[in-house]
Length: 346
Image 1 (cartoon, rainbow, N blue to C red):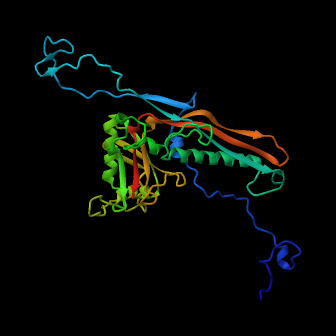
Image 2 (spheres, one colour):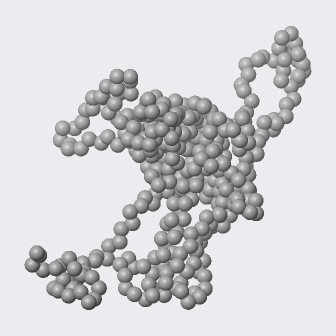
């Protein structure tokens, strides 16, 4: 048997030398959960004043090269040529909107816990701070979602905002976005299980499609899940052709580092900043695990706050300090065609 019983440090009336051993518990507290919120953090913040936030979108008529003949009045037809005449320039406008959604996290610390010493510490102030961090993750998860909007029904359904996955959808089956303002099919990429990887040509196709809508080389942000981020980093070392040849890379022989991570991708029609999505908040896609991402233009989406994030303390009724943090906001996607997405296809 063991010479001593250092393993036995239980409650009295245990006996032996082990009961006098001091515990070694450091004051380091580690939270093992991702906290980054790139979609929420990069969005422009605006004030909301109603539970349904709306904005208008418009488009220009297609260009024409038809000449106007001398002496022709506006709208007059001469031969096979017809002047477009007087037109309602606002007939193509549409109104888009999203519902405000309320978010809340409650917290409480017992009176005994507040009084004792603990690692962390574990007091009401720390509980409040932790609730705020959890609330931000809730918002990021909702903004990244594929759910559509829903109105409060006074019974079971609360106000629900439509996530990016619902707005950036070329085949939207609901009335969220009119047909003329839908995300083009070319701005979406479905990575099938047979393909296995996301090709550089597919990313360039999405960027070009977005350029075709906005007409400008915008600065885009790709919020990529782990598998998608790995594929994009492979752009630096794989040719992207059918044979997947490895690229030759020249580097300084005096340096001991070769960088194969892609943080900034420069294309012919825009510069893309590649950032990591929060793995706990990225939408779950069928097919290839972890293969998802949103290519967003920060100019064309924002957050509208009806109730700014804040904390409220509630009366202590004898059990300990308690309170909650909450906010109410929605996602405004000012032009669904200015964004793109990459998803797995089963």
